Image (cartoon, rainbow, N blue to C red):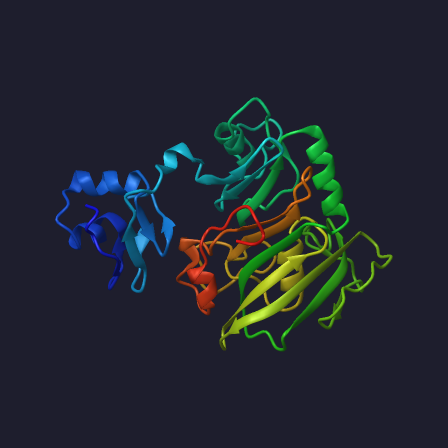
Length: 319
């Protein structure tokens, strides 16, 4: 089994069927290889037999890869943990934390299952249920306070990647506004007249606005006549901030179904929390964590090659 050479998929199908067609493995052996995390799709382990593969996907086998069942819960994976913090990569569809009076799975429950030792992780920040990507949890009360303070003072860099409808003009800019719970039709949005567009450069200063002031920076990294790939950075962390600001810019995220139902097909909201950079709450060491563009969104265009070739990166900004 270790002699299986990497190959490129030539037609749509299931991962198990594709792998069997390229090897002499039995049905049972193929599924065991996949379920134990030895099969990689575009460099990312995939443990679902029925995972859909598309032309151009690169399939490889790593017999030394860890079994994801030992590092995964509800599809979430811990990238790093120590006595102070835990960094988790969560899939779309998973809550960041349990809703009141609900037993629905969440990233908090997952990280509690996966972290070793008596120090239980605590919520520091959240992602929308429909957004995939990175979350950091604190494992002590002092670490929680330090990280939440760092977030409040914009000392945690949160980089998102997304694909939006239409061709975004220019290189990028800042969007600022006052966000309110009901900007019309019972939906969140910017208070009337509060939204501003700023050119790239130093971040604009906080303004007094109705609602909660929110600031988003976006950069164009690839475009086509029908869609644009953006890298987006949050300077505030308001509910649905990126989704609202990009919709109000006239370029809703593909797969958006709340603020601007999108005619362009996408398997789900094309928004991914791709990188976190912050200082360790106790040692002060600068840490960088990256999660690759998810496999279920790789059929969208345009996608920069570096999004597709990115690998999971962990502790240490020098890596």
